Image (cartoon, rainbow, N blue to C red; front, side, top):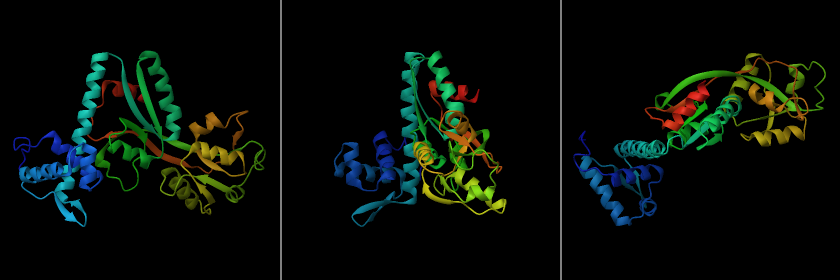
Length: 303
């Protein structure tokens, strides 16, 4: 395949088609999304194969399937289009001074300890700046980063994800507390790990890093794993379950410090199982160039 695809005639319309085909390999759906006819989409696909000198698709039942070459081109095309969108945002920010929009992702603890203070400071320094914050588990945030839906995220590399796809700057580990409702039967004394593990626990799903850390620590201590009748990534759902039951939830200390204080309705159990989640990092897509607004907020978070 030639290395100089643009000299051979590769155009933006070809990139849009390839990027769309990585999301759905149904040509009619892609054509509708791009606002062109299906025959026009077929012609673009044929042009790509002529320019590249290799097949990028094959017939697969009623649809098509990208070949290995097609998948490689599609991934690159999607990345180029994301960079062009970011370039457009950067030009707008340059024209308007301190204005701009930043899309940040974070797991719950750093959202409270790092993102919120930085956003407050940014609102004072650059009132026209707007920030969107997505609070979710690391696997979802990493996927959103790769899709170009976030500028950066405070999270951890999900299990099985290729680290070469990201640039990661470690920030800090997280100590975990066990949070219950006020008036819980185990408050006021010195509960043993066995007593705590007899209760129901509320945690994220089995693939969540916090849950894997909790279970690995309990196993290393020779303790049984707790019963988890409800798995949820929702912090609000977790608090609601705690409020209405004697369940226990392992939460990052940044969260328990804010939501389990006096008069909050929640408290930290006086038992330390030594649960520490590995350091989270400030992650961006590998090779991504942040807009001025995003870089400004990134620096404020790190500070």
